[in-house]
Image (cartoon, helix red, strand yellow):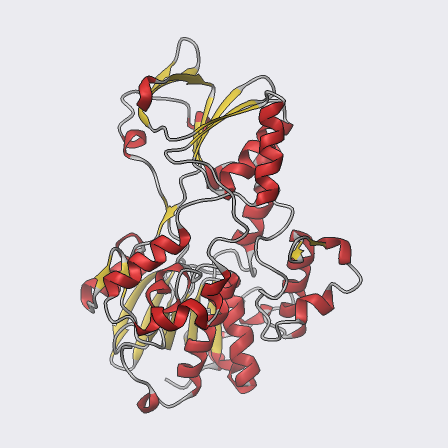
Length: 420
């Protein structure tokens, strides 16, 4: 399998004009995890550039990431300015030196536009667009010397090594949602990831948002700005914290003990405890509290929906909740996050069925280099949390995962320990 060049014939616009056939390293997904890995890998071994191909149906870097930020009108990231795909931690700060107004307090959180511009700069300066194949991967088959990838158009690509960087998870839906007894209009019940505030017309409507995470906060503020009455409902108390997980998880303060823990179930519990469900940032909490005082948002905590019925006569939802609450609304949005589990990832489920490794509550037990057992398959993102820690799905986690995977990709296999 040496024909690495045949996979990458492109037009000047970056579109594939010749069908792919073989490559050394195939990266599935073109989000921030993949961009971080490629930037770190090329920093270590520039000569690998012609031997890497990235597969994503959008044909562009960070498409889904940018779309989600745009749909929710998110003004800035939650991570500080030092967290980004480039190996140089200070790269984004230097890039933004003439755009200081786009670094938000209290820890210079990069504005969405300056972060996107910086990522575009990385792609252009490193000439990464031409390694991107505008195809998704719908099938994987292990071979004696690597893998066969079946693309969305039916073509088959051979790859010696694979990195799975598209494990964002499936939308999590509560049990009551799946038990709604009658038909309803599709636009009246949506998961938060499918709501686009930019096209929303909801003045005078009552929107109920389920969930207490940051996405629910953005949705509530966006709907209220458009004249809707908003009720936020959560099964726990609403609370605020600056980051998803304590900054101690970015270094040895917590990670040393975490990595020394031999029990994978205990590691999973540590991850769940560290993330502790969804939370607002202090800024978002303050904005929501102000709208609560203005009567435009209502917050109902420690309450769960038990049943939902669509009333076609009134074109509204009738909700039966715990604590004997009865609520009605025009739209129902579920900001209930996503489920990260191998069995819900179509490609990894196939791999797990044929090449099983231990799975703990949906998370695979990978080697210390994030490899799938003895197969040349590496996993990034939230599914790598048992090795990377609670921030695995974040930008900081992408950097930690890249360090582990790059070390494996540039060194002989005999130097790699299996699990630990």
